Amino acid sequence: MSITDWYIAQFRDTLGEPLRASDGIPDSENDDQLGSRRIPTALRDYYRVAGNHWLNTNHNHLRPLSALETVDGYTIFMDENQVIVQWALRNSDREQDDPIVYQGQLTNSTHEWHPERYSFSRFIIAMWRWTLTGEDPE
Image 1: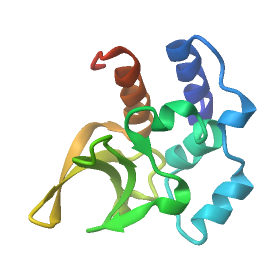
Image 2: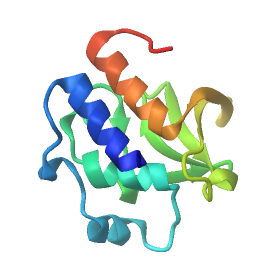
Image 3: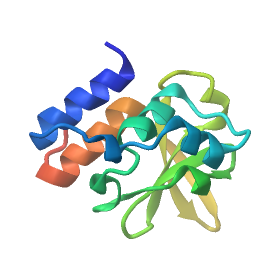
Image 4: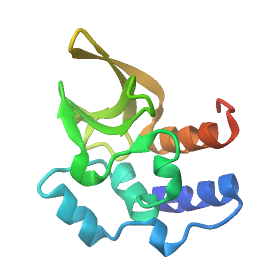
């Protein structure tokens, strides 16, 4: 199963309804926002199928591709709702299809980065399940 198909199935199972075409962002728009920047396949595919979904800004905030920010060798893609932590992918991992997510906490004007237990595709779905149910997936 492709990552795209997996996202579609996870949204359907989590929300009880399918993703709509309007929930995604077309590749041409993604390419315009990214310019020459490269991002992992799992991140690109997520924006393609669910980048405009309401869940992306309901609690924690998935950044638009144009607002991805590189700090200390990490590309930040999501901000916690109180901006206490941010989530990012390590730039050295960007050639991987589905790299591990890192959580960054700002301490003394620098980020302290720690790996999460999930790759991007698993992390993003676990985040939205937690947002909707309060349950921490294993």
